[in-house]
Image (cartoon, rainbow, N blue to C red; front, top):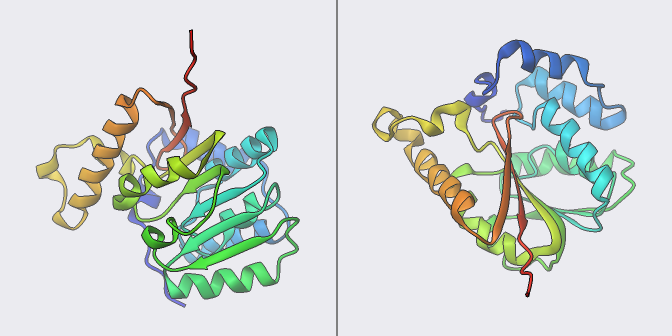
Length: 225
């Protein structure tokens, strides 16, 4: 089974010794989640890195969501991780990934249901019904800024949006003319996303240097005086 590899897997945005410590010192996952993580690393299949996975695992254990939406299932690793805490709707358009994710879901013993939605996220986001307490975007990075408005509509009042891979190995901050043409659209759209996130007064945003960058977004509450 062939997968398209992500070259940014090998371009950490923090000091390599710190990265290695987080990946080696943080406890490994057990059961099928641990098996999938190990197999994905061995096969060079792009999934969220260990430090990001452990952060999301701890975050969900604290906020205790009731309903989760994921855009970008891949082989189902992160969906299974999140389904330890709440039902998950997850969207994937790659038929190879869909079939592998289905197999992994079928052989799992997940505490909560996982609904795999096959097709383009642009279309499926209009059909799913919120509110969702957590929305995790981990798909085509050039599409993040297109998906954000609908995700904000689907987000519960106290919900959180997590957006993975926002820094492109740090190259997102490089001049546009230094970026290869094949990834220039990703570069421009990620910069537009960062501009939106950091300048919209209705959004509360933080960035975490985990993996290739993780954004965490809440909607600000309007306080009437």
